[in-house]
Length: 200
Image (tube, rainbow, N blue to C red):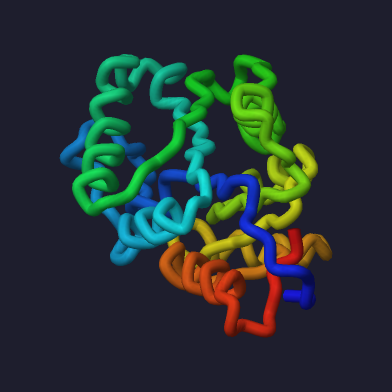
């Protein structure tokens, strides 16, 4: 990352499936199916304790596909929120698209609608945000919204996404093995003793 003045991001946007919890080709339909990737909860805790708002940005077409009720989705979110809070951290908010991919909505990633919703609700300067995801759609949404950084993790769909992004000359601003390593990089860059800044 280029050297810049150290500045706490206005927010860190994080995708859910494949970044925080293990993804599934059959979708995540119950709290029991939501298994957290090693180190992901701790990463969120560390970011939030550093004073960085952590906001989830996630497509959840299980609603539009009729596979899960809204209440069922909220049960999964509740497991995530409670797990983070029990570990001493906080997720500021969750913005999700419930629509089927064919619905033609304005909020499903790669469109920037969810990011704009977060911006409008919290007055966030998107140019000072980081989006962390595992897919081409995540990074495209970040760039469409004008986020300062679009980071890829190699969990979930990250490895094939990296191949596609490089082939399309759209490499992420940074990539990491997982969310824990991404948090390590960001937090170390913000430490007074670090000479490496984060481009925001």
